[in-house]
Image (cartoon, one colour):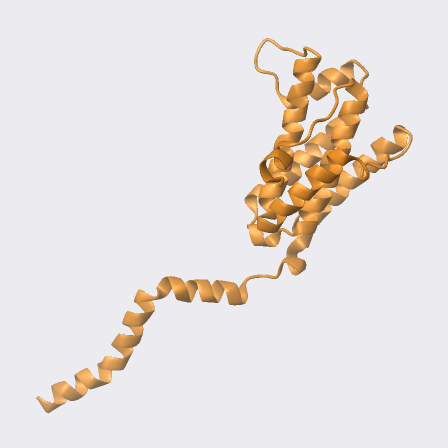
Length: 201
């Protein structure tokens, strides 16, 4: 009997540790994740190269159009930008995705305003191709659109903590630039974004 009690006494601590580890497994996993997760500044390069490509395309397009305008002073920019910054503090990924939705909405507004239709549902890419064929937009705008879409796709599939506010900020700058190009080329005036309507004061 003494041997049995000694044996149980030896097993008591290991069993207790295993049992406590099982009970608090989620808290332990969360603590390990917080301690060992990569720092955003160390892996921000994951999205930055694609944004660099889009920046270069935008600069080339604006050079063809006579230079990049100063968009920062407009009330429309300030209101949308402030709202996006507020969203980006919560989730840079959400800010990028919402900004992409704004690009798609802008193209749909242009399609409605200029009565650009097709036999079936018309997509954003098709709207741009129609405008290019009508010589209202430079051909490279399609490359910029595709580049922005690739950035959105990548932002969707990588962990949110790998994205930074700077990623969202740079994406917003490209969004506002492409909205300027589209509005200037088609005469369809930009409106305050849904981001501003949703996250504004």
